[in-house]
Image (tube, rainbow, N blue to C red; front, side):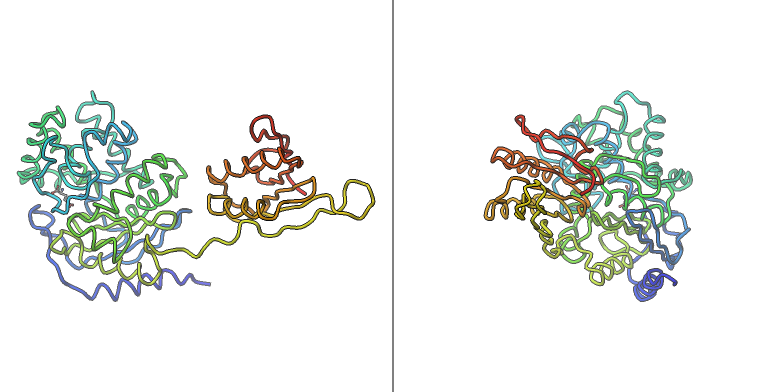
Length: 428
Ligand code: GLU
């Protein structure tokens, strides 16, 4: 069978490609020479598959799409608190290159506008790194997100540097407020070099998928940043990634996203997919017009919206059965109950499971909790389950956990807290 997915993506590309609204970015001279009709779309799954259609191998400069990833590197290197002291996370509602800082502190409003991105650039690596070493760390970090070695378009870097008056103005203001201590010219050079890193839509889909995957790169399996950093970056992309159209974007498309002036656009839907498009004509916000249409279409066709409410989870307790009489008494009476748990042991599931045990308590001595059909145990679910076990033991039950995949523990005995123990076996 041939997969229907590339055919679907090709159809989306053709329909949305018919639109020719928008204009090329012209403040960076080489970008004004781009072929306006180039068009590409890639979708990256969290287990490492990439579907790509159109000009999928065409390289273009990453521009502002570098911002969320460099923010991620700064967070990984210095921690959330230290980065927050320098760059806030409030949507600015302003254009990307607005010369605006927080009134008293001079702190940039968020890491997606240029003021914030110039600052996060300085926060990558140890504070004493020189310009070259910092850039190496950034390039290696962006490459790790993409899953291949990326390079810089030297010509575009130099061309943008010549006209980077606004970015210099912002960097000098930041320096004046003491947000960073580096030479503003060095910071602008590094930031614009980071914007000139070459990528394809496949690279961007993989980078977005890494964020959607909680920080683990889907091709290489390498953890690039922690789950917490990934969550922070996605949150900021959701609230500020689309600059002055962030609210409209979040309600209509509903995918944390970031655009770049060369025509790239990424979307990262947590736990689902990474999306990337390329088409150089831009709207008044500096975002690819056809990219916006493609994302709108994917979101509505596939229900890919952050606020799309999933169907309520199936009950965590799949079946409750009585155990055959195993005490050898031969009285034909059951000696206990088995609860077959299924799906994800998370807060919602465990709340329902505990509630059913409270409302309809297991009457007999033995209680078996069978995790054979469980596919994940969230931290909160684990704590709730162990607390449930502890209380069952204190109520006089002997508890056995059947855990063939070792989700909770290896075979043996597990301490459920305060000296209460449960037996763990790997099959029933
Ligand atoms: N290098 C560009 C700038 O700083 C990036 C802007 C963008 O892609 O939105 O002006």
